[in-house]
Amino acid sequence: MKILLLGDSTSFTGGYNPQTYPVHLATKEIWPAGATIENPSVAGMTSTDGVRYFYEYRKRNGLPELIIINLGNCDSCSTLYPKGRWNFFGKPKAGKRRLSGKFRGKNVMRPYTFDLHFDQTLEKPEDPDDFRFNLSKIIDKVEASKVVLIAPVANKNFIAGSGKGNFLFYRIFGLPQDLADHFISLPMALTDAFTAEANSDATEAIRLYHKLVQGAPAPFPEIEHIARNNLAVLLAEAGKTKEALKLLQTLADAPGARREIALYNQARIEMNTGNKETAFSLLERAMESDSSNYRIREPYRNILHDLKKTFPDLNYIDLAAQAFSREFIDHCHFRESAQYQLAEKLADIIAPIAKGDLRAELLTCPVTPEYAFGNDQLLSAFFYRGRTAVTGDVGEDHLRISDAARRHPLFADGAEIAERPPRLLGELGKMADAYVNRLLSPYLEYANRHGLLSLFNSSFKPEDLYSRMQTMPEKSQEVIGCEKELTLAASQEKIAAVKSNIIENLKQFLKGDVSMGHRYRTMMYWYFRESARYGAHSRPSMLYDRIAIDSAAEAVMGVAVMAHITGVDQSDWCRNAATLLSELDTTLNTAAENWLEVFFSAKPVPPNHMPSLLRPYLKKMDALV
Image (cartoon, rainbow, N blue to C red; front, side, top):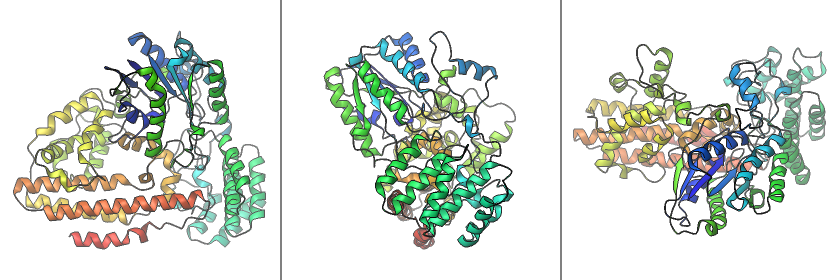
């Protein structure tokens, strides 16, 4: 049985520990022998990508015997190049203009940088009529009873407007503005007010924002918009609710303003004062005004409802009816528990169609977000530039990846980097994971062979490094596999140095100034990178740097391996370090859950509480020495 699954990041099954519904669905014992679920789903996939993939699949395999469609989040979002309506005889028109260089793209994301040229009028999502056309092209070709159409649902509580543009410069009610030190550029007109905020001088910040709102017109209209928003939030936090709401309403009605942000702040203020019905209505309006986030909006959900009426035999799941509204941490990805529930719901529908009692094989083959434009690379090649071997001087990329590896506590001395430098273009991609995995592979193989992974509990599984390779180019996988059996250098001096690196890196992490609010507000900057590592489901570790904890655990594994090679007993130290990392992760998970509960209730979250939360672990680090 051939099954095709077309979805966006909500259906992505990459990462080294994916816990999304397609993974759970494949394990259900409802499938006939030989059933395969082909899943090209990827962040950024729209209905245009989906219909093109469907036609290409049909050329290769014939019609699928079952097709699952879970699209709409990305059609609802304004992306750099619109994909439009798929034309069977060629690429979409927008794609042709995009590839010819004649199409003007939309605003580019510029992290932490005030974009004086941001043009809100360019931010338009895919045309809902094109969304209808594209999905109809697929359903027309398949017997409707063999189609499962999923209507996604979005997290209305997520911060509106936090996708592109100058959203970081707008205050959010109840969320401390602790980003000033991270800004790369800031207009001089806002500098004094932001400095006052950074110094916790709300009175002075209010005075300065008042001056900007009531004074001469700002050289750029958005400066006045930001001042009005931030003034309103500060006034609301000072108890002047009516004045704040009036300012925000004026902002929401202003031409060219970030209406979605103004409405979102109104909603949070109303929620905080107990006006829940008004707050929910404003949250709905904020989301429907927001084309910055990848989350489905009502015009696209209405089209999915209409398709069910047009094709009455269609199998239809409306996720809004599944009580999943509290199952988010981010903008549109469910937590693991809800992913499992969705798999159960799908299994109930599919079982009578599949008529089997075995598991299915899940074929994870994520395409690129540019698939509709004719880019046929798999995500691995797009992400890691995996083509041929590196020759000659590779310049800045080589240094960037080498430096990233050197920040790993196991490779900080640079010895293994010098012996095994990056030699594949796939290792010189958008992140250093392919190269670091290659350096780690012989340690993992040795640890597996000698039973050293029992040091770790279920919160960290070094063996999952191998499954992380699935998102990498085949050449990188091949090299990593060949290097499993490398002879490792080990000495007491190396062990001592790595232990010291682990402690020092963790101390730097524990002393860091990145708050959970900062992580939450900047999610759109790093989500794609971390989903390729951890999978696409929502998880509390989105609110802290779990990679720092993972790197420390990998280095502890390295210490255990080198100790075994040299015959030096480090078992107590490794066990204590692994236990400490597990406790730290549990503490941060609990703190993240508590933070979300406070934030979603629109109560002011405390200023960065990470230092006080993590201070006890600094003493425990000293004990490890």
